Amino acid sequence: MKDFAVFVSGSGTNLQAIIDKVKSGYIKANLNLVISDNPNAYALKRAENAGIETAVFDFKDFDSKRNFENAILNKLEERNIDFIVLAGFMRVLSPDFVKQYSNKILNIHPALLPSFKGVHGIKDAYEYGVKITGPTVHFVTEDVDSGPIIIQKAIEVRENDTLESLEEKIHKVEHQIFPEAIKLFTEGRLSVEGQKIIIS
Ligand code: GRF
Image (cartoon, rainbow, N blue to C red; front, side):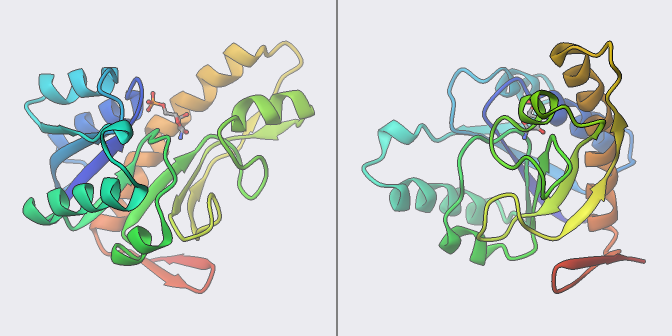
């Protein structure tokens, strides 16, 4: 079985969904490490409660992005991590980092890429007035929010939706499709052909 790490910065509801699906055997891989750049992330508590090793790399403790990332890479190597899941990790990984885990970093974005990239995907889509939105799971490449798409799921935006009700709907779907994408990846069912992913 493959060993993986989840990177977090915040509340970690996606991490929780992944922990639950590893525990139930739906995802057949070992979640061995949770890495946070935020020492106060609630996600760290979730990991501790599940008995998963945690490591905090606070950006302000490092004098450069390179040193920050090297410290993380050393930890990943030490724990023989095969692939990485970004679950609400709020930092952009450098091209050098991404190259070391090419097509082995999965990310979830709360909008239908390539629309509404960036940190406010749900709000930007809501304020734009789209009728359909939804989360995207994709591989991470050097360009932010642009890698090959693994799964997307559309959600209708109703006239009576508020930003909060839409956020709630999107998170619910995230918690389904992120574990599903990780499962497909761990089963070796994803082949990347340029920008496209073929699921076998
Ligand atoms: C999710 O909405 C995800 O799409 C985005 O960050 C949020 C993380 O939420 N990348 P949580 O920490 O998993 O609750």
